[in-house]
Image 1 (cartoon, rainbow, N blue to C red):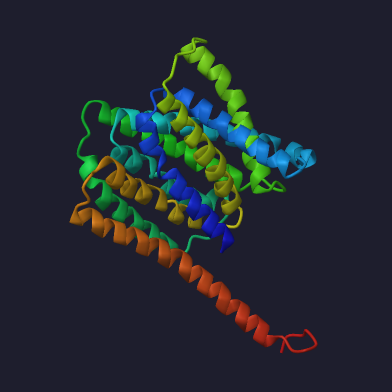
Image 2 (image 1 turned 180 degrees about the vertical axis):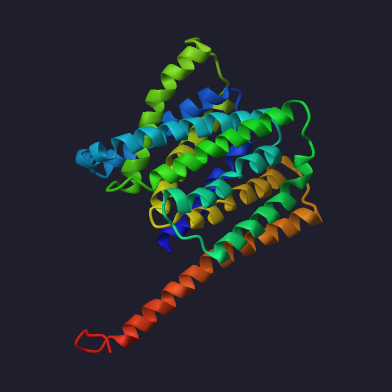
Length: 306
């Protein structure tokens, strides 16, 4: 239950990233770099102040997975931010949230998880709801919009890789795991930005600085800490279903901040999304509770099964 709440909060935080990206006057790779840097510094302060020690033995065991996860994280941010710059929030979200479908499809193969019929139906219903929510935005598919959708699909591939790779990381808590991946992302993105954009430092206004700090602390720091901590107790298919909270949050924020109108069709889609998420997760928790009660009832005072 705790892991589910952590993951849900991280999805809500991630849902606001599109609105921030629209107003930050920097390239997508620079946003990804500063996001990783601010997030890593923020978590490093928490890590040091709480007097935690890095379990270097576990870091060595997970070194390869951490490197590939950081590469996936960096690529995810670069292409996602570029998608928001090239097209609408709706188009970017629609293409990017093809990722949960990829996670569900690959989980039985990569993670050896059993595909349940109910989980598959919930994904289909959630995808239908997402389609209804974003259908109006999807119609704008000419010019740069097609490029933006392409970037969103590439970002979805990186997000899928990030999710699946993190399921193989063992022995690291959420804080240490997040700090390491953000730190490695900084190391990877610095040469990438220098090679692709040069070493010129452009002046930025105070609004951009504030937005980057907020984005780095909440999205890069707190958001990804909750993301990694939450996914440890969830299987890949549950992560896929819960991930739909992210675009739903994006929709609500875009309505409240940008002033976009929510049609009746989008309202129906939002209801389908919420129902799919609730049925997919509540049913699983209910089964676990019933199983626990049956087992407890079957154990006598000597601790033996009846």
